[in-house]
Image (cartoon, rainbow, N blue to C red; front, side, top):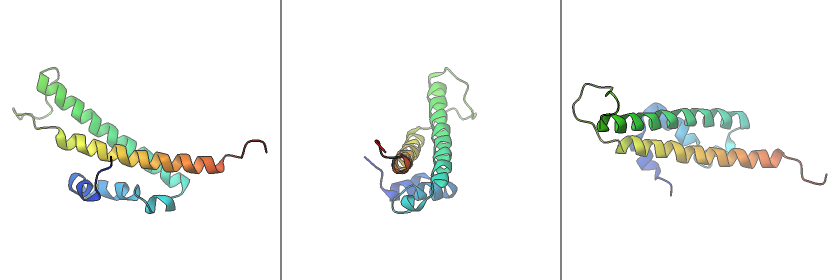
Length: 111
């Protein structure tokens, strides 16, 4: 299930909110194929960064990795996990739109 746009606004910074907002309909339909590919790359990079941060925090809390900050308490990764989900949902919308465009470009079978 998707996340409300208001929740996305709370989780994301200002520079992250713009591209994620472009992944929502109806603005998503107005993007060209090249713009969609660039947006998908950006979303993949942000999702991967959030995923890596969550993994590192979990490993550090178990004592398997060195903590990146000197703070003795490990903050909850719930916010980062939710942020990763926002990027994943956005990427899913962009990929669906890209697949739709590619299906339109493909010639009909038998012609």
